[in-house]
Amino acid sequence: MSQKPPPKKFIKTPINGTKFTLLISSAKGGVGKSTVAVNLAFAMQNLGLKIGILDADVYGPSLPKLLNLREKPNTENGKDIIPINKYEAQCMSMGFLVDEQTPMIWRGPMVISALKTMTQKVLWKDRDVIIIDMPPGTGDSQLTFAQEVKIDGAIIVSTPQELALLDVRRGIQMFNKTGVKIFGLIDNMSFFKGDDGKEYKIFGESGVQKTAEEFNKDFLGNIPLSQDLRSSADKGDPLTHCNPNHEVSIIFKNMAKKIKETKLI
Image (cartoon, rainbow, N blue to C red; front, side, top):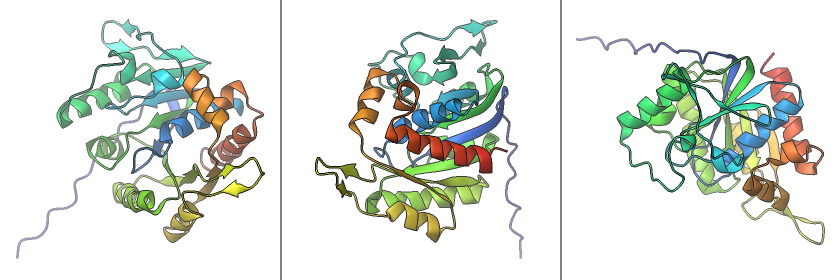
């Protein structure tokens, strides 16, 4: 009988210019992953870490809007890309290179090429951590990062809705199979506070925490629906940057502190 070939080993290339690389992932779109990624990044900055933010969502880049960035990055020697600085963070997004209204009608190989450019040809400099805002799903883009880029850990963002949690389970399995350590799960849009002061959990209750327990992963906490979180994102100044003492910013701070103290040291 013929023997099965050994599993393919991938050479994982580190991103130069940073000590740690952290993926922010969601297996399902529309759960607020990009807003969480940017606010978590600036919460880490508030703890004294030098941050970089890489928007890897080629089809739907959010960073230009979330940080109110419209300029195009410069290049060095016509090849390597210099990230744009905003609020003392180094930033890169495919959205910096194309017009805001231009759809990215690209097939898989072109997407993979763009992702490799953003991980290998960007001149990150002296960063403690680079936060990568991943596209949703478990397709080519996610596999490229998991198999070819040295990743220190991933955080999965989800709402507590059961429909979203089905995809979270797939995302956990993907990271487990590709050897990417999962730092924890975040429950976004967990609840909102009514005028009566009560918490209303319209998407369900404790689903993300129970999924974390099911797979023996850390649960990092709950982020509520917040008008201030939304409006600050629309203005291009993340809440954890413009108002670090806001009650929602404190939630992000506690998450960032836990990640820094237990995962990045």
